[in-house]
Image 1 (cartoon, helix red, strand yellow):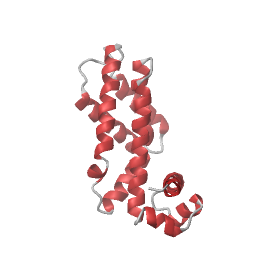
Image 2: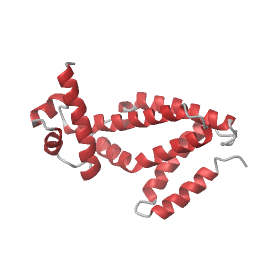
Image 3: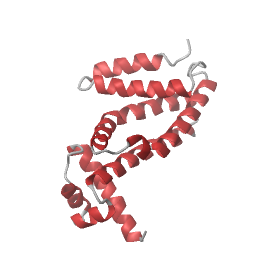
Image 4: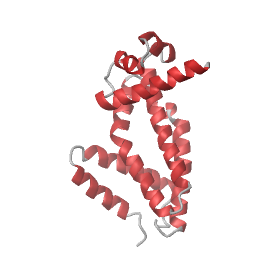
Amino acid sequence: MRADARRNRERLLASADAVFAEEGVAASTEEVARRAGVGIGTVFRHFPTKVSLLEAVFVARLRRLVDTADELAAADQPGPAFFAFLDSVLDQQGEKRAFSDALIAAGVDVDDATASVKEDLQRIGDGLLRRAQQAGAVRMDIGTPELMVVLAGLSGIAEHARGDPDVRDRAVRVLVDGLRPR
């Protein structure tokens, strides 16, 4: 891909991310083009459909979560790094659900579209978990399968406590406290 085309694509993804964050996944591709400073034809040259644009933004967001987890994996204090990872996952849950629902409604196999990113996230999450356990910050009887269920639980908390941050925070504390050694 030419350098200018790559820059346009990156600018489009950044603009689309901002537009979808502000206006939701129903926002128009015209608004994405306007914010990126390109014509609508450029949007569709890179992303033939709005669904392909939504998918690219969704995968890019997950990739940023992987990058965050990767940075946390190098942290000096494994316990706080692990719990910061959980916070990062929780912070993305509301918008993740909107993207997933829109993609599923459009017939996209979200699991297939995000498989490689999720594998990376699982691998890095497992490393963060192991380091936190070795540091004595997380129970030893928790493995990667339980971690994946906990992450799903965080998603459920974010969804069900929508609009009440106090309930969300208390529920998260209960879940997270259950990960700590007895």
